[in-house]
Length: 212
Image (cartoon, rainbow, N blue to C red):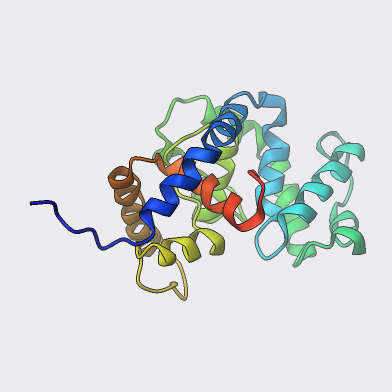
């Protein structure tokens, strides 16, 4: 006897996935090809995105590159505060960027130790100011690590839509994050779509684009 699933709209999800799978897999392959010299600015992007738009964060990264932020002794707060790409909490985030630049050698050394994705995420949460579980997962995904959930509001909304979770959490403690990630992983296994690919599928449903 076939077991009834508590999930909903699974057939629609599979249809969407079938149409977008080539682009999703190509995007994930792009992440594995990011050169190490770009890791710092991928980290900067993930430090900027909380409470700010991904588009603005990407624009600020380009301005910081043009200014030579990695190699120059400049205060990035004015760039972050620009009206055309405003980043919320720009002063605090500017301090986090400066701190990340100082600790970059240790970050690169940690990435070279061959730790598993969960171990690597835990290291970043402990050692990089401004990175929570979501941001650390996001950064690691963007440089080629797999099987980590990026539980932003768009993903959580889709998890509720498909009855993977009953309600949106008011906050995400480490324990709650791991619990929801576990539910997300089990759902991915049951529907036959890797969790990383579901993440990008959910994002493309929200935005029409396969973003990073």
